[in-house]
Image 1 (cartoon, rainbow, N blue to C red):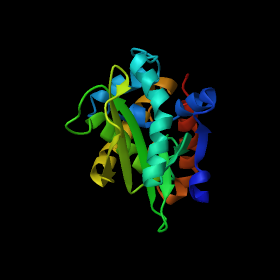
Image 2: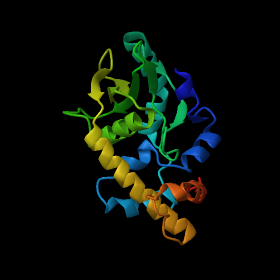
Image 3: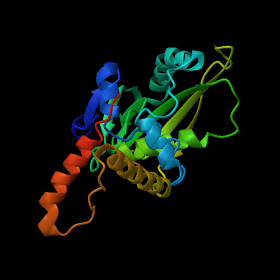
Length: 226
């Protein structure tokens, strides 16, 4: 991993309390998975603030957590993408966060990621919710492509000898959509947590310092409860 990427690590999921706290202060791949339109902003804000239905996991998510280290080992052995538990921030917007399952940097300096899923259903294609998560991770880390890996199981027993995988290339158009929706979500959270309108995002050079201070306050306003 490059020093530049290492400098953008804000937490590690092995320390779950610190990881959850850091995630609550920004917009993650989980948050953007359901962002499909402006109408989805309200639901996402409710969930972020704890007002929506809570999901504490089930037998399927427990199975996924148990299998992920094994699948990550296969990814490392076959594609050279090492497991990662780090939570990264984006280079410019520090409230954009992501925890990819694997990360590698090739000899040309290009970032490649891995995302691991388990499923009890046969897929004809990658579900759009997972594609949005992949595109968001690519945005946050500046990755060129992601190895999407999934293992199908029946009653929690893997069906195939090896997981299936496919490369997903970076899609600037889809990323731009997600960034726009994430900005709307941040603005909605700002309104709810401060009772004020979000600060103007476009200012002239004379007001640049004032903008930095406002952005700092906006970040603090997004320090939501776990």
